[in-house]
Length: 445
Image (cartoon, rainbow, N blue to C red; front, side, top):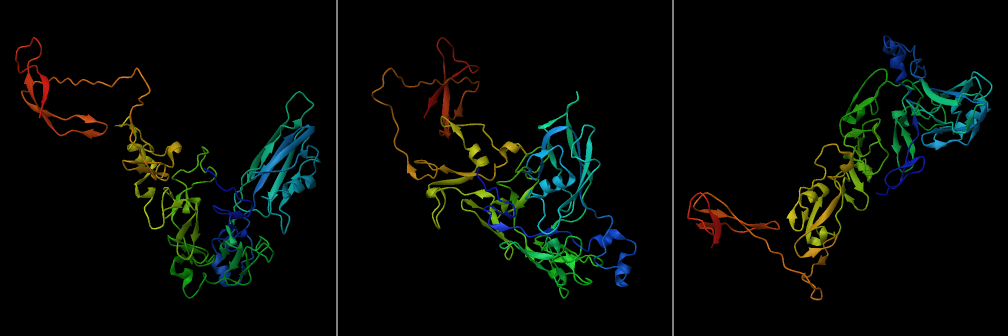
């Protein structure tokens, strides 16, 4: 299946939507800062929203490099730096990393670099600490490719990256203090919230992470959380939305979720599409936040855009040209035949099999008798023997029945069709006396 691999900053099945700026919630630090008296300090005016917690921290990673010639390449979120020489300084390393589109550096330095030596790599090994200053949360580890490094001593060069401090700040759309306009990629901030510098002060991130005054209630104070959620109260005043609602003020409807048609693997085994990770509109539709309904891409249908449409569908007409049934892959497997007879084929019968993840999503036409084609639009013609071929014979099959009863009934099946019940009565076989213990069968009307 083909799908769109969107450029940075845009998303959606057709890449028509824009991400809004993400940032840290400026009020959540207050809970961690001093949980025993944060509420009283706020009430007494002794603590402001701009007070920052020492426990919510930025991500820090460490590069260890042992080499005395060559170069390495660093990658972050599937973007790769230019070749970085082994002798690069801390300023050089910062420049290489901030040149990546996946590292946020539009309005402020994105990272800080500290080395315990003069160069990124050395014969005795250099440790380089990378602090992320504008990308928040628990970040993926930088990947280092050291195939271009060399070491003059008998040992091999070495480069590794480890997480030395996990980022604990939020990295939420509009800092969860505003509503994202996904058509424009612009945040509409809640009352008294505005764009920040990422640290609770006024800035240019566009993320609603700056509180211009003390926040004393959840959004929409007359109907907190629009009556679609629960207000946490002091000191964060965040909304916990009810199922089916989302947004900083719980004003937006969610859309149905389904297995993703197209996306990167989400499990530790690099398996995609599994049922334990579902997404809105199955990544094949756009969610209307006002109605909670998915607008599916052409060729897909279902509440969550989780079904591939069958062909041969005209406006206000059934699929398959109204000459067949639209069935899922798992249903089609049960109807499969070989030379007109049933088979034991299944598709999706084994739970959580990543090879058959689409068993209930991909659909196709099972045509009625007399019709054919992927959309059942064609009529079948009579079939027969080619009169110009020679040396061919008709098939002959023999039916032999052995039973101990003096009378009974039998049915004969051929190519999924069965005859009416036929009675049989005994007759002696060649050289046999009439006996109730051994009979051949002779069909009778």
